[in-house]
Image 1 (spheres, protein in one colour):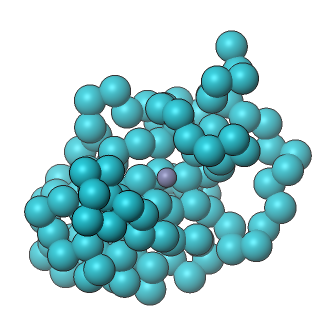
Image 2: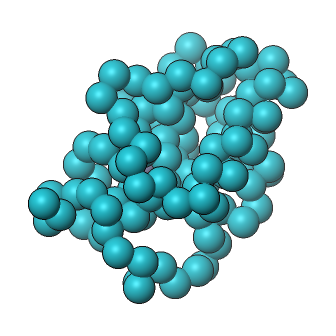
Image 3: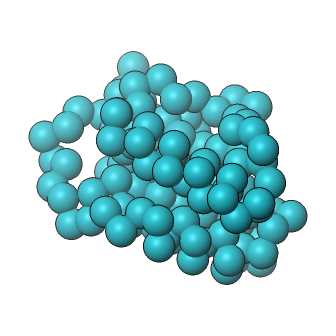
Length: 118
Ligand SMILES: [Zn+2]
């Protein structure tokens, strides 16, 4: 079991809360013998305008090769303080998205990446 990063993934600017969430997700993969956890995006790439990816508060996990629903449910159950979503189910971009802070207001946290940040 290892923590892997897809080519081009950046964790530059990741906030500590997000690091804790990622570590928790990794322990879920370990405990449940799911396999290697691959981060497919963090503060890199293009996301929705206002995405918490740009603030270092979100990451995506690869689900291909696993049971996506199972991975989603296990990670969601382990992270009740995060928003965990199963996105693009059945499509090539399928992944579990985790963002920190159920209902928390991150308005004042500056973006550290994204199309509007030079
Ligand atoms: Zn995401």
